[in-house]
Length: 155
Image (cartoon, rainbow, N blue to C red):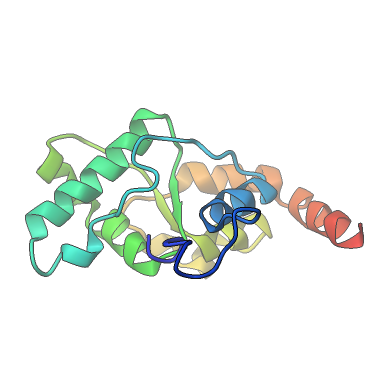
């Protein structure tokens, strides 16, 4: 995603790699990061108006790689990735010839869940792929997240 790359162009040093910020945030919120083959590949959105089929195949491969690694969901800081990976998922399934059914969250939704906001307040009822497993997970981390963040701020 363009939000996390290219690190060499935005002056991020090796000590604080920008491409790890999302993973660090997910872990801080109580999630587990699953490394998978396509984790750093483009979702396909930038080419959707020029070559929809290629865009859908790229999205399908991205989702398939995550599903094959047993990820419960994808989290993206980019609203365009979220659109392409959730909204277009039924068409991406057809493009790659397999069922994916992998929930995709926009990063603020994950943060909101971890802090106890209601899924409907976060627009999760509007997702094409319903994020039921993620909502269930969030009930186990609410409360721990605030304590963890507070402890880090105090140190």
